[in-house]
Length: 427
Image (tube, rainbow, N blue to C red; front, side, top):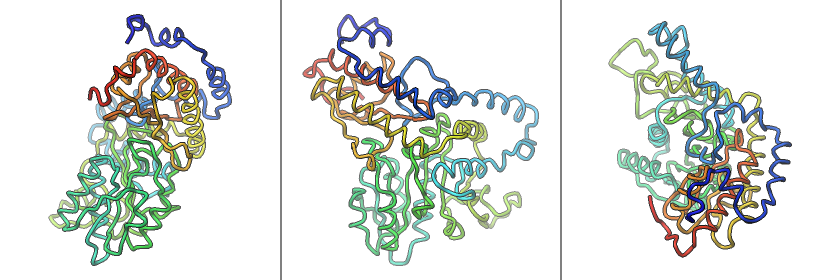
């Protein structure tokens, strides 16, 4: 970086860069017309940085600290054990699941919250295999999947005697056979931001007699999912990205209603027992989505998530999707205008039907570029070897944020000679 940039504040770095900010006025107009706008944005704790990493960790909803203080001081501090009944702790996994349900297009009683995404992937995959028809010998796994999903799918396959076959999502409809038990697919590619064809892939799997298991981590809260509309069998998702539940907040499991009686969890904990306080040695699964529970719920993180979901009050997922596409379109336009020609290339599809709510840019020296962006107050993240990721959370990301991020990116790229930027540098 140039010596003159070393001591600049984020504002100074932005305002003093050369060239005309032709899109700044347009950003103001778009923000003024935004139906979500400042009122929804004000539900979150934000500062002077441009935060475009909500696809990794959502911002803090303003109501959460007060709610947690109440839980700690009153429910834990005063009611103590009585809070399981008097404060509704025991029913929190299903109650909060019902708050998530409409965000993924599900009815009440189809979603349970608890455990990590990884554990819920394990439940869904093994549970799906146990419901598969006789003669199934394989499961398909999204070849571009987040690594943990693949690790768990392979472990589940070893335990159940099935083979794993990695398949590109666009090829699943052609590759599924009568021997396929299920396919585990990411709704949005975590690296590129590409939106996979949930309706088409689900239909193709069902036509072959296989189940559809979807990972919604990078779509829930950013776009309509439609798990019931499209007949999804099982789905999992985290809550700390676009649902803003906080670091490590519990994940969720969706089981289609018609499959719930057949869902045989590989982790039959006492919380999913039909009579949990009977303490019997024999296991009998509870009715409905409760059988997706395992052990004692993580109450503090669960109740933080419950309050975080209040930020969705009065917000339609369809409006969020409209703003998401407008934000990412605008950001791509700004990058094209501000970045030196040829320095970055979008690997996120321009086609709205194939785009999630992030923009991923290939960039030589991406690690160094992202480090400098962060130093100047634009927070995104980096994926090896050469990808800059920018996540757009429509509840609180503004068009001004998008414009400023693109402007600072252009400034950084102008100051960092391309020949000095080695692809894959850093971690």
